[in-house]
Amino acid sequence: MHTSTQGANSTNGKHRRSFTVCVEGNIASGKTAFLEYFKKNKNVEIFEEPVKKWRDVHGNNALAMMYEDPTRWALALQTYIQLTMLELHQSETDKPVKLMERSIYSAKYCFVENHFKSGMMPGLEYVVLTEWFNWIIKNNHCNVDLIVYLQAKPETVYQRIRNRNRHEEQNISLDYLKSLHDLHEDWLVKRTKFSLPSKVLVIPADNDLEEMHRIYDKKEKEILCGV
Ligand code: DCP
Image (cartoon, rainbow, N blue to C red):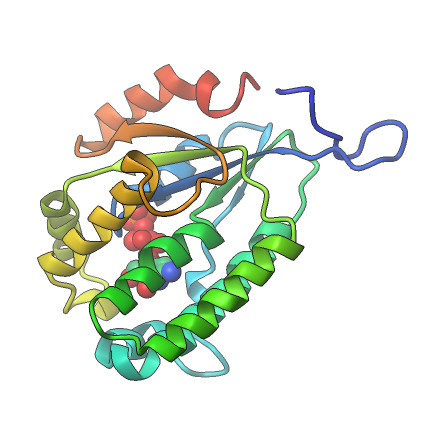
């Protein structure tokens, strides 16, 4: 584990910060399987994306409503996602590694951007969300030490989405996934548009689960910063 940070639960009573890793990638790129793989490590605490909350906002399935009518509901969903991701960033752990599914950054740089680019989100809503986002990252601790980018072809994730058959995701098109893929690439690989909050480790993620486990095994030290 790196030693440069102030650390959580150290003996002098000060909080030492855990090494924070966010796993990113397109829908169905294998983020859940990635988290599952590291669950067995006692030095790692997993923070899953709060999809459950998005499906039940005081009785409303905001995720399903967004897919049914994005122009009407994308702002409501993404405002709520921004809040729940902020809560995740601010959650602390005693463990040396905090492993998060996605981040407030991909919500903004990939999903909100995609809604706006595709004409589903009016300019005013985009600007309001952007101003909220800028204020949040300036004034709150949304620290990330490493992003692991699971880089999968849009065709691969399209097939996985078809196979897993989540009811909200029935109408996701290949074009939607291509557009999200390009935004992940712009942000994490080409680095043309948005700033990066941390280093990035790119892992090809088109392989089957067995091969992915072999890769995670090989890269474990790098991913967990030697823990
Ligand atoms: N989603 C969204 N806006 C965001 C984040 C997610 O609309 N800012 C949607 C996309 C999916 C659902 O939420 O329909 C869950 O998305 P993820 O890609 O984050 O999670 P998966 O479960 O698909 O990931 P994986 O299969 O890689 O484990």
